[in-house]
Amino acid sequence: MADRRNAEELGAHVIAAWDRIERWLHAHAPASAALLRPAAGDADIAAAEAAMGVVLPPALAAWYRLHDGIEEDGAADVAGILPSGKTMLPLGVLIEEYRMHTKDWEREAGILPFARTPGDTWSGWYVDARDGEPSYGNLGTWAVDLGDDPYPSSYGWPVADWLGEMAAALEEGRCLRHPDGTADRHDWPVLTATGGLTWVDPRDPRLFPKGGIVLDGPRPSP
Image (tube, rainbow, N blue to C red; front, side, top):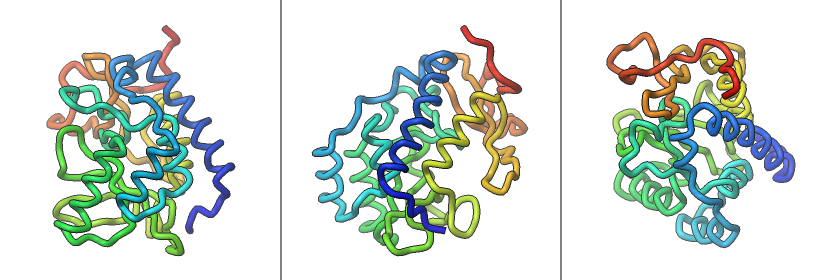
């Protein structure tokens, strides 16, 4: 179902979840924490919305008010902070990505591709900004060759709740769990040898970073 909680409630949920994530990053993955960009201001968000002709759903807007994405240039080995090893795009890059999807690829308007694999444009996460749709405010995946699909079910996952589950997975040292409780063993947090965080399927040696450490339980405080 569409995420229809009011903006104040969603903002509080996002702030609380991201605070847990960021504290964990500073304690256990400082190289990734160092890539967090400063907050986007209301004027920055309004300008991005005007450029795309789309209003950001409240949870996504609240997230950008904490950090305007993540620096990814030259840091592909430590920038995959989000599940599936994706990077949250700065607003300026989101605008470019959105224009490419809607104009060059002729994808549907209102699907905001806010995250992608660092240094790549092959696949990523989106948030549904089509007000009135059942999946409004929810998470989905996009890919060059597969199109846009809600994640993980027919309507997707509210972004604020997804961030809360991400925080819990990091704190407990486990893979993500879908809203129905299903374990997503393709998305397990891994610490890189360079002090960063990524999320991979540890069963696939092609994806596992050299010298990486799979989280298997809570990490001790430094």
